[in-house]
Length: 290
Image (tube, rainbow, N blue to C red; front, side, top):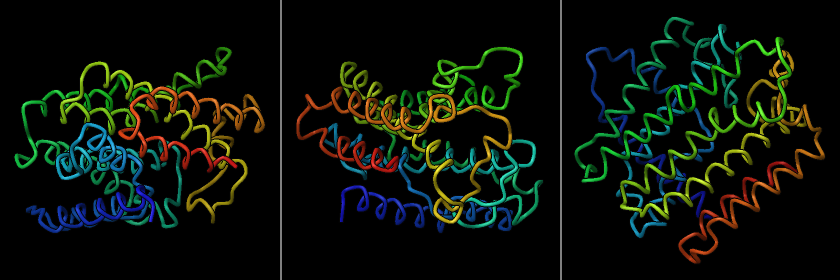
């Protein structure tokens, strides 16, 4: 079993335990929320949180709040992304999207519920320490208008009035995809007491990892089937949105995935054994493009 798989299994256990103990006066509301967050997924973000803790000499147990929060934010963003007013997707992780399964109005509220639950989890007193406030503030900014939401806004904006090129797409990816990946790793590292130098290196690593992840998704959207990916494919083309792979072509996109991966690894390999899991994760994600 790989370190990545072991971390994923641990997160699934923690998530199930958290959800089973979560009480609300509106129990039916939890049904679509659970559907959204337990509907499979690679769990890359909580895995990054665990690896960030280990990089700092701590354990997964020390950052369960960050791991839970980041995946709740990720899941809410997918619920809202899939809505008819956004990408209008019908399948996610091999199952009907939340608005198809429960209705559009319920999907909006399920996403809202997951977002607010994320900050309950992030501020769980069992995990809070002197660094938690800064870690949660970092996470909130990455999820907001300067990060993921800002990237999503750029993505759905009208690009026909100017030359929307590679530089624009790259800037959008660093927000829409990269911001939460950075937050998963760096909020965890902040809570574990990382130095400013270490944090800067982790931010650079995660920023390049985000480009590896998103360009690879572009490639798979062109080359893979809906059955393979468990979601609708070709949606960017259908919606008239330009992607990295569409702009530069598949061969150049694959070359750039390797280049971003190499740079991410070079940034942290100086830390030796502390960085081994992060390096292995980057290499694993790179192979998805081929």
